[in-house]
Structures are given as C-alpha cells and as structure tokens.
Amino acid sequence: MASKTILITGAGSGFGRAAAIGMAKNGHKIIATTQASSQVTPLREEVAALGLSDRIRVERLDLTDPYDIRQAQTWDFDVLWNNAGMGEAGPVWEIPVDIVRKNYEVNVFLPLVLTQGVVQRWVREKKKGKIVFTSSMGGLFTPANWGTYVSTKHALEAFAEAMQQELAAYGIKVQTINPGAYYTGYNETMADNPFRWLDDRVNFTKRADLRKGFDDFFATPEGKMDPKEMIDRMIEVVPADEGKFRNVVPKVIEDMLKDHQQKAWENRI
Image (tube, rainbow, N blue to C red; front, side, top):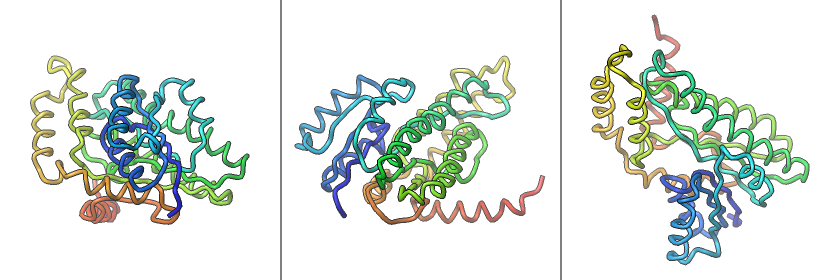
C-alpha cells in the first residue's frame, strides 16, 4: 500500500491516538488533531519520544471553532478520518433537548461542515481521496438509555451512505468504522453524563437505577472489550484503497447486529 497522508480528528486520546501512532509506524504521514489545546504538547512529546516526529504532525482542531475548521480544510491530505465525538446518555424521554442538540452539533453537524469543505475542494482539484467516519455498533441498533448518542451515529450512517453514492463518480471513497463497546474510557465517561442533570426530585428515572444499569453492562465481557483488536483493524482500514463500506468489530458484534436487524421486522408493540 502506498503511503498516505491522513488527517485524524479526536487523536488526543483513545482509538484516534493509538491508531495515529500505529499508522505512522506503518509508514503513513499523520496529521493528528486534538480538540483541546492542552492535549497538543503532550502528544507532540510522545511522538518525539517514539521517534515519529517526521511522520506525525500534531495540531489543534476544535470542531466548535470555525477558524480551526477553516484552517484544517486548507491542509493537504489523502484521507479524512472523522473520529472526534462525544456522547450523551440517559433516558430519551427525559433528557433536556439542548443537550441532545449539543450532541448532534459535535457528532453530526460539525463533522459535516469539515467534510463538505474537504470534499468540495477535492472535487474542484480532481483529487481522489477518502472519507472515514467513526460510527459505532450503536449506529445500527438502539439500546435503552443510549438513544441520544446512538441516534447521532444513525445520522452519520445515513450521511456516509448517501455520500458514498454521491461522490463515487468523483473517485472519492467513503467508509464507516463501527466499534463495539471497547474499554477506552469513552463509554464509561459518557455514562457519567446524565448524572449532571438527572434529579430524583424531578425525573421519573432514578439515579441509582440508571447507575446500576450502566455498571451491570460495563461488568460484562461485551461492555469491556480490549481495544487493541479495534485499533489493529483501524490501522488496516483507514489507509486502505479497498475494503468494506461498513466495518463492525468484533465479529460477534457484527453477528449480533445482523440478528437484531432481522428481528426488527418482527418487533411488536
């Protein structure tokens, strides 16, 4: 595989950080961007310590800052990996709608702004690039109390599928990566978010009950999978010229999702 230049959003932690380092070790050039300025210097120091400063350039790209987005759209790269995201959990029937809007802004609208600017430039320049979205297993099914976050991933799935068809004529490829519940800290932090608004004096959903539901899930093997398997797949998928449009890992989750989608046709109220 030829060396690619890959822009990664959300490379300050988790999958993005680990995959950036792995792809650089495989010979790719990486623009690793972080949401917070405070993440830039530590990542640059880690990159230098690994001897990868010639392959990984670290920049801030806060999607909520339009000037950051505008700057990033001028950079030269072959693959845009929309990996940054945040999540809101809790019961959909009680969550404050302004919190839902914020989750859509960060996970759907702002990546779309970044992506539109990139692909329109590529089309003008006749560049054949690739767009990758980090979706989720939650882009393909909806468990109770995760509806807000996973609905943003459902939206990303739709945008990605539409774009794959729309951009094929221009030689621009589009792909999704759909991780299971890997133990990176992301899901665990997301599970804390409802407790900043959930109020036993006001809400029907009780704090202790919701906490127990989350804790029980994270105690299962499916709720705490080793992220190395997913990172290894990301390192392969993101730079590749060929591959599946949708990439669900691990296989057991792919099978579970297929079964769920089949059963959805028989689901009764």
